[in-house]
Image 1 (cartoon, rainbow, N blue to C red):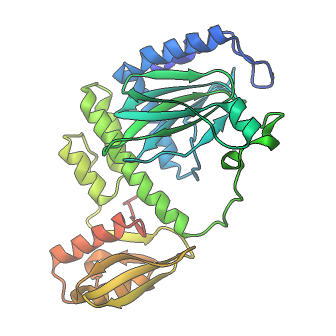
Image 2: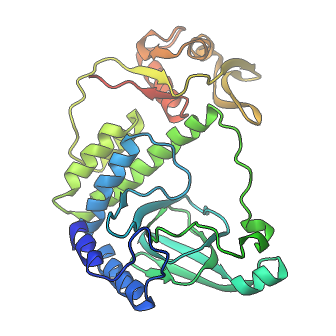
Image 3: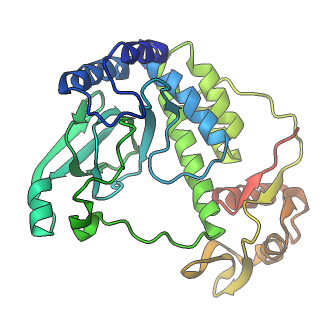
Length: 339
């Protein structure tokens, strides 16, 4: 089953249009869940979705929560991937409309809460705890509260099919327990781009690993896209997976600071030198090295664009390359691609 097949199957179901407030029949959502269950078992469906996700990653659009890679025009239904690091999750949250969730890789642990009791008492009331392994697909029909979490030491990935009305406040939203009330958005800080750059590379490696494991004829193109968007270390990772990669015509290793206004400082340490960055919580040391790299880290702290071959100090070519990779993997810098 391909993504186009899923879209066509959804179009035949009786979902409301985006402007309609009616809830679809439970049978309609259950039928959609069955379609997703069959699709998640098909590598080509996941690789079709992956192509759209890679285009979304390439756009460098700001991401907060589940960001759809596809929105269906007829119904407003959204599709998104979720990436869950080891022992990580989004925390407790509420869905105000129906959703369907499928586990694509590894597993998720889902704790649910009794919504009526939680609202009446003003505190979260546990309901169930269950584990969903790869291939498992579940759904929420009525508004519900849950907390998905990856309980393992490996990354998990899920796919989400989301009602266009999910996230809209319900009539009783003012009575929500404190854990469900939206927090004030923190001020935008340049360091957020650093965190986004790190997440991007982790996601690309997960997508590449999934693509390489399929054996699908669609996989080489997805691996090539992961390679093109990847850092130097991610590109090496894709190559190790045996992916078909694009030729990099650039002979220079150029790095650019990921955000204007990102403040870097070289610091002395008891064991040598460090490169620190200003964050909302103060200075954080991102790279620590021996004293041999002091001049190179000072050079990096002072420049928006770096030619790795020109890093100063008593470094040989291999050491300069390794420091360039460390600067990339920190998320402070990104590689400038040849045009």
